[in-house]
Length: 179
Image (cartoon, rainbow, N blue to C red; front, side, top):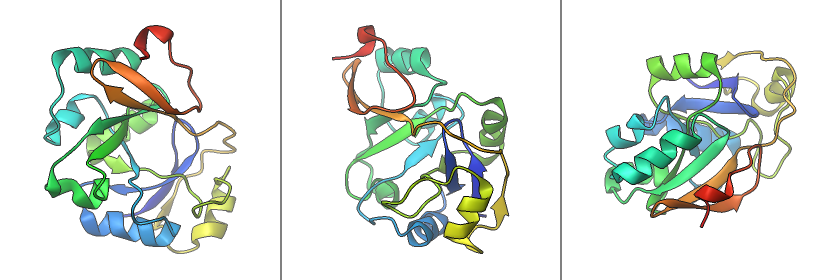
């Protein structure tokens, strides 16, 4: 199923990350550039490992310190098995949201792709009504979380045991974690 839900930052159009057909539908519905990977929401840093991505103990400790938070972390993901997710970029962005309801949902669903609920280049939907204007019947489920006025997540790349900021967003990152 494809749903529009409130996340820890803004509304997202979401679906099961491990179902390639669902992922492709979201690209189509969102009119997203097919070469741009989407952020995956996960329940814990353990789910990164479950996808066969290798991280050092030091890297896992760093992720454990910054999550849950509106910080999406890009990690190397060279497996061709997930080409439909990384779109040939050999990396994926993950986030453990700082939202109890969403974490409970992720325990049930597993990883979900969660781009913002809008067409590429347009303003993200701030409420369910705006999302319905974008997607009409494309999403099977709409969950109303009221008006959301947060920024998109901060996006960082994991390089060794430090982070490099790629996009400033909803969270500030302590200098101790940065390159």
